[in-house]
Length: 600
Image (cartoon, rainbow, N blue to C red; front, side, top):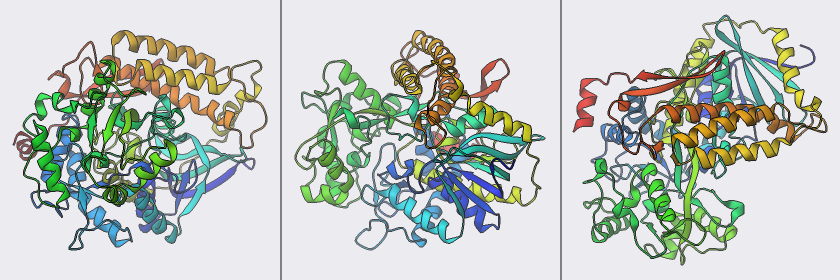
């Protein structure tokens, strides 16, 4: 063991986005010796890209809002596949967690009387998203980072974790390496919290940055934990489509929340023709009614008119944009137009959406105060993840917890915008609380030296392969496969073809060649990350093939309708000796009083 860095902690948090930081703060406050391990630099997390706001029923702009309405919106948006207890806890505790952020120094936009400003977002009944312009995630990270650093949490930056270590059925540690030097590292610990984010780098067009290679999902599955709802991938409807160098870069839903409208190349607002039956009655049917709603929002009044259809849930809007493009009514570069310039003044746009203004000015040479943006769907978020206990966030492996995007169950088949930030606050806090409680009640488990030797040997295999392929070429083929065959709309033939291609790529990944040495070597890092992405891509594809219906972030062209029988089941994926198994699991029974809320 002297050849490796070794560290011993009560709790190790893997991932330093909002969920990981909030978990670390809670674990440290409980008296547990806590380490925060991140793949990149502290402060560079996908949380920063959550620009529009954090959803919480504060009722600052509309006193009709309350946790029960937020719960109902979340369940309806997820097409009722959510783990009801997670959705309930989230709705009930989000206001407290957001006010806590404010107490810790977060600077939110304000109403005229000094309360936190809230804006409208898709799927939310009322203005619910507390925000800081369109930089809310950045402010959240800044606040949590300051709080965590001042608590004295140990931070390990630019470390990649590769495997979880288990002793007698309980987590005992994790194995990985330092990215700069390539030196292996072992953390011996009593509890681990996975907060590693998503899996978006498995797709070609994505808002996710390079870190999101399914690390936590794969490590948990390899160790024996369950994954849930993995077929549900959210394609955010508005990513940049031009220039090619920034294709997929996120455009906040806040643009539509501030009155922005979607138009095809003929200048038509096509969303009025794309309101699903379950949402009819909730959204405006005419431009006049939609304009009345926007004017109320601009005037700071409580809207009485119904919301514009541009504020439908993300799955609905993404599919509508895809239909326009396939029908030949798209923009010149394969998207549609998002227009805020005709709805708001230049000063208002620069004040409300400063990041969007600068993003388009600098990256696409477009002035959004005068011209529309070209937008299209981009792989953004996975609703599926590691299966956790709703109260504690503990996985099916004792001592292993998960929170944030890597955890599944909260969002059902489709996430509402703004719910990710409140999700990571609510369940990051809970994961840190229960991980530390468990750690302080247990002793350290044993770490097997021979297992570490084997993991280290396997990690170095790409250096010994001669005449193999470039890992970047294999990765690009995987991304293309997932984009074209396991994208917004799927078919049985495409999914079966994707499984065959993934198996072929898995064989090729075993032969990739890496040159040079272990010191900061991007090719080596990707050669290892390929295994995460290949296995989790297979999980997504198998789950999508099994679910023979369309619901939320999963659309089957050969099964275009939702099936009431499938609406009673989640799907759970597990690693078995002979491969990956996908099993139907009945949804937990919803208590009568909450069921009545949904029916109302």
